[in-house]
Image: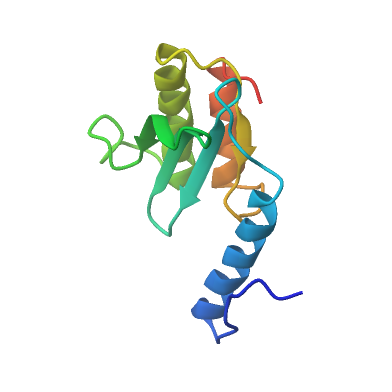
Length: 127
């Protein structure tokens, strides 16, 4: 079954495969006002997490490794992902969000993705 993503070589193939996985996940995962979607975007250097209400089309809270409080901090990329997870959970709770559905963005649930999710859970966000 084709998802409309071209097959390429090398890194472009990896990006296309991640895009196909994300499309497959998004068919099943949607954010509502009661349980918005926690979207994780991972690049080689940075992590971005957003809490999105898909019905209204609004971002309720967001955090990134580019934020001033996290950027240039100590630790490796997994430590920064933990900080991003804690920060997005704190901002989501301030916006009145208690529970979310997790959208890993086509990435494997391991490493930095798992670190971000675990930190968000520890900060009080329910998945």
